[in-house]
Amino acid sequence: MESFLRAFEASHDTFGPLASMGKRRVKIAIVTMQLGVGYRHGTERYVRTLSKALRGRGHEVKVLAGDPRGESQTSGFGSPILGEQGAGAYPTSGWMAVLGSASAEAENWLAVERPDIVHFANPAHVGIAMGRTAKRLGLPVVVTMMDFWWVCPRGTLMYRGESFCAGAPGFRTCLQCISHDHPRKAMRIFGHLPGFLASSGLLAYGTRAMARGLPPGDVARWTRRRRFLTEFLRKVDGIIFPSEATRDAIQPVLDHDEWKMIPYGLEAQWFQTLGVPRAQCESSNQLVIGFVGSLQHHKAPHLLLKALRRLGWNETLTTLAGSADAPEYLAELKQAAEGLTVEFRGALGDVELREFLGSLDILVLPSLWAENLPFVLLEAQAARVPVLASDVAGIRERIPDQRLLFRPNDPVSLANALEGFLNDSNYHPPPPPLSVDEMAERTEAVYSRAIRRVGRAK
Image 1 (cartoon, rainbow, N blue to C red):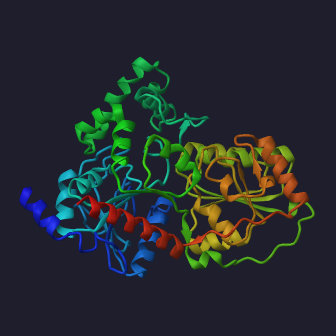
Image 2 (image 1 turned 45 degrees about the vertical axis):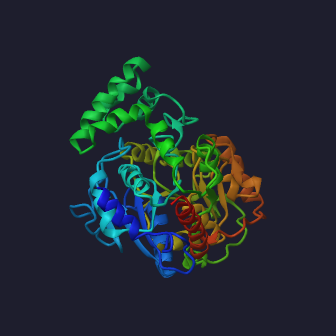
Image 3 (image 1 turned 90 degrees about the vertical axis):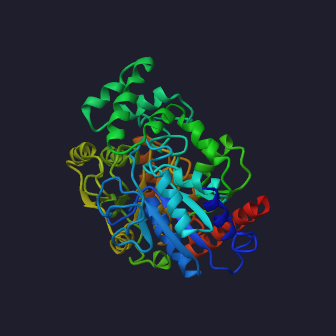
């Protein structure tokens, strides 16, 4: 081990890339929870666009990603992920992963690849072993807060999907929350037990997770999960917050000065409006309303349907687009849509989504949880489509016109906002989102600062 460390440090002396990025070609390792053909959520969008932009700026980028659903990856650490440039497989240990199951593999991979910096973009399901190993080897580590996973195992800071959580309950409360709406009925019982009995759920969850490869140590770490992860975060060399929501929820517990706000950036095609400018609608029957996002309770498309029913807008064309990740909730949505003019489009590709946004009069985002920064919000604003949304952190900062915000989890407030939009569409447009090149340039600056910080320490 000592000889390996000496060789590693010799190849990364302070006169090389670790001294300063400058115009040098830097080798970047990005670690993320999942990647592959079947994964198209915000984290994956961020990793793909940032990697492509950094490569376009002359850097070498390697991505390591999990595959929780076992959809598209081949076996073996670092083996290619089908359809993803420069991406390799990282062992998936399940949602209970804290450190994860790949410490030895991570060390070997770093020895061979020798990146100049390691960048985490949501390590849920894979753990932070790569980051801990990189720090031990003297490599700079940067983290982008994709959601609230670092302080909330569900990543939403919503207790039982109903109320906001400060992210600081004991592990028993977390188990009750996770169990409350678990897909398996047998596991839901732990959501109804008192706290001192709910801890028995840790054994049940841990046993199943260890069968999938989770190391036993992570079961024990789960009882002090938040402290373990925040201690790691305090040692990293740079933190990127895409929104005020993640900054306000996580930064106060870190006592960490090396952080920057960098919103997500969009590629050029998102700034091209594919639809035609629509005239002022004279009646609700002429409106075209859209929703885009995972069809899950915390995204709350059901609130939109309640508001439409309350208004009596039965003939208003409303389209719900997004993957159905919760079959029971999808069945509830379809039942709630009876008697309304509602289309279910399923998940949309990039071109389909751009065409879809161009066809709308308004996009509605009725989220219950404090979003980080929804990509679809930025995409709609880039295409100059008005967005009506819940007044929650992560969204409100991108909507300057208060008339386009409504109280979360309140179908009456949403109905009033829809009616107001119909009667007066003269709203103040938001500033345009960042381009992906602007995002990459700002991220380079974080890398450079982190590299210099490690170089000074050496």
